[in-house]
Length: 476
Image: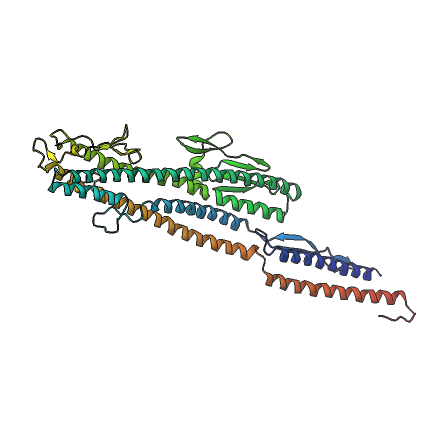
């Protein structure tokens, strides 16, 4: 009877284990479309054997639980690659907007496609001075020079204003990203507490899925590093080591204005803007565009605007106007602007000359019919006055350099997207739910359950026969 009783226990245990495993398969199938869900696999354990008369007898198996099929190495690789790709994507978006300001105008005199913008304005200004050479006393030709100068100054102003607006927009985007990141950090800390409480020494299943999903979202926003701690918790820092989450405690980022733009600070008040810029994520890309790319473009425009305006003013002052007076300034430059530091010139450039007769087309004392100084002003177009090149060539080089940067970042982003997709596919192969695999598991478990049921039925018949020994028994 002990042997039959043991067999009953084994069969019953097998039925319970198979049913539990079937529940795991059913749960996997139900969550096939759940974002962040990690495939669970039933874990089996052989029961301790029993020794009778020196012979070991097996006691069946039980299902000890379900284990999520996750890889910390792959998860961290995806996390890091997400940060890199997200940073280049955000930067590329900003660079494309910057490049759009200069589309269609290379600044080269021989480029017929340059029909508008600063490059065309430079050509028009020097062309108007060339036209003035043939008839230096012609008032309409003099007015064309002032009109061309006004258009150039206006386009410098407009481009600088749009760059400033883009910088402001990026500043606002960065603040919004940090707000989202702080919310996710709070969620991670709360999940840490739940996991440490409910499953400190084993896989926490869906709670860990939720935490990993939050970390992936956080990686899209900013650069982070994670370290597993005791009790199945996580410590989260920036890539530079600034503490963000420790177990259930959150150290949120704050913001404040510094130098006219938003800077970010840790819980101790330390400025971590540079750390966040280098860390990656959307925030890193935004800050790179805001603090590096836009200022470089602004500086290039300021250098060009200052060189052209100051050289024109200097040359005009060297001649005589229509009334025989020394030439006055054509362009107004911002106070404090210099060749060494032309900051703000593009934004503040203006045309202060209103009377076309003040254009000094003649050499000093040469008379109104002389065009010597007009020729000299037109020749500025061919002088290496900006970074060792002519104004048109400098602008052309600037546009080309900007285009090369956009192309470089675009190529990097494409490669990073490919690498990220490859990693995500690896994670999917390990952790994703395959309906075909689950169908195969379901069939295997059904067969196992059916076998255990038949064994249970057979044992029941044997038991019935034993209890009714000597009595004719009919089985249904």
